[in-house]
Length: 452
Image 1 (cartoon, rainbow, N blue to C red):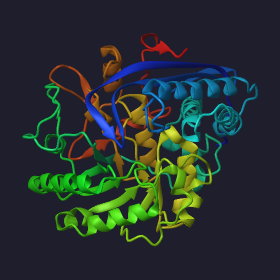
Image 2: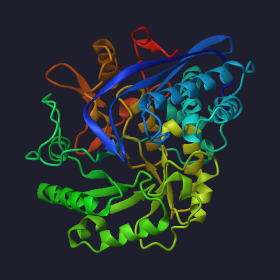
Image 3: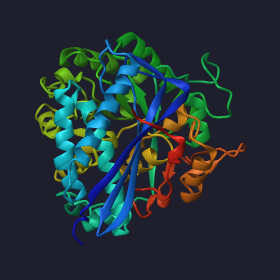
Image 4: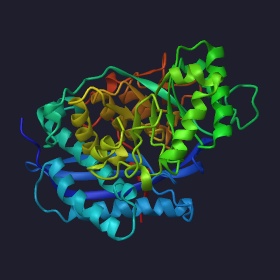
């Protein structure tokens, strides 16, 4: 099958306010609310009209961590990235493959956003969302689900037909432990009293969790104490667990990172936790991460890139400096994930990880999860559901439509509210293998606010 060529007719941008049930702290930022962006694309294929859609949370202090900017200014950066991507896509009158549109309109939008002062990570946000929506429309035009569409070459990219694309039935959920999260039931702190887990301990018991992602502050004494308490909780639960550590750019240079890791190794209470640790994610600030080598540091697990992945050559630069993997995130672009997966497939020493806490129930969690799992990711950071109550502020009708369209992926509680279903620490993906990009339902568009 050849790539599907689409002519873009319409691009609509929306947002919806999201309130977190628990505060989430990473690095120096604490998030309690933010908007979720939605994209709706209408495209013409062979004289027929098809729609595609995508969604992504507009998280503050990740795309641009400048302390000089407010959360609202961060949100507006991402809105501008979306507007620039929309304008570039609508300026293209030709019928192109989804990848062709990404290469032309997406790159043009990226250039405009960077020229207007947006960091590249924020500038990628808009093109990444539009890439997902255009891919969704193309798959619907071809009458194929995501996996079968990749295998058939529907997107027109140079990687998917050379990859061993999996048709995953499930993926292991890796539960994130934020810096403000309560660990045990007897620990003081916020509890919304909504019947959902509010601590690491209660979440692990409720969902049978066995993979965890632990946020680091970069402050040695504070982290040693907190990691030891986390290890104690997990040991008490009797879980044969695995963990990853996330530095979130908290280290200024390789020297300070090396000293920090030596302190971890010298702490007996952390010996078992470090033995169970699978990787360390983006410890160095992006300003220095691709300039300083980490190859000689005494870190016995793969160190991977995340925030530094803001241009096509980032992975190769990282490999030359001692990194051994990179994250897949739909907010950085589906084609970036495909390209990195292809590079990793040729070298068994490297790894592709699934990292994105903030994916919300509905389009975002479905598309990002299937993207990573289809590329061979076996455990994925996936607990936006821990910080947001189900579908959050989405209308009940919308939440129920997604739950009914994707049995097994969601479960309905005693109040009738659907939530992501996590059983034995895993997510059932079978209902995502539907025509289009991982979704047989759509947002209630009239309930959303247009992005001005």
